[in-house]
Image (cartoon, rainbow, N blue to C red; front, top):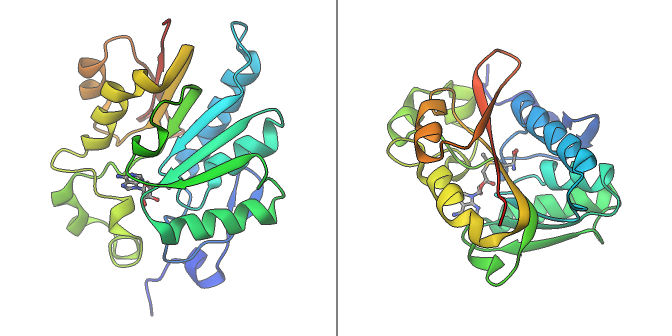
Length: 216
Ligand SMILES: C[S@@+](CC[C@H](N)C(=O)[O-])C[C@H]1O[C@@H](n2cnc3c(N)ncnc32)[C@H](O)[C@@H]1O
């Protein structure tokens, strides 16, 4: 029997109560990412300092984060980046299905590169974060079917998280928030890289979401 994930066979995955088209061009959206997205919606809605209307989603894949934010935050303008033109095709298709294509600008490029000169109230990312040497040990359904570009986070899995923490502030407006998903072992390293980070555990009690609030 094929280990091909059901979502690729049915070409559908639910995420935050919305249905997303998925195929082998994109990562299948995960429950942990739903949690981060809901956390982001809560943060934006309850932020008393500024109206958080300008949002960037780095590594958008199927567009699940950007589209869910757009549906729940009708005043938000979202810029969604991916290095993969194939993934962006899927994301654009999903944005159209959900009627939010006017709220989201999709840009192809390498991480922050398409954002030069822009500032955001919220930068959110579920970056590739699996250590390179662990890719071969993943379940076959993941290793053999999901795009490795969506998984591989470099030697310790932290390549993109370091980039988010080091370069992110340059793209944040005053009082901006940086939010990202991480691997279950990354909590201590993230705390070391950025002692001010708040780390939220997932439904299984595992370190999963990093949140950094910037003042200037
Ligand atoms: C873990 S997946 C997340 C996809 C989607 N946001 C989600 O949560 O289901 C990471 C995404 O980052 C993209 N990516 C990988 N390297 C990138 C880079 N250097 N610049 C921009 N996007 C990148 C991949 O193509 C993939 O779509």
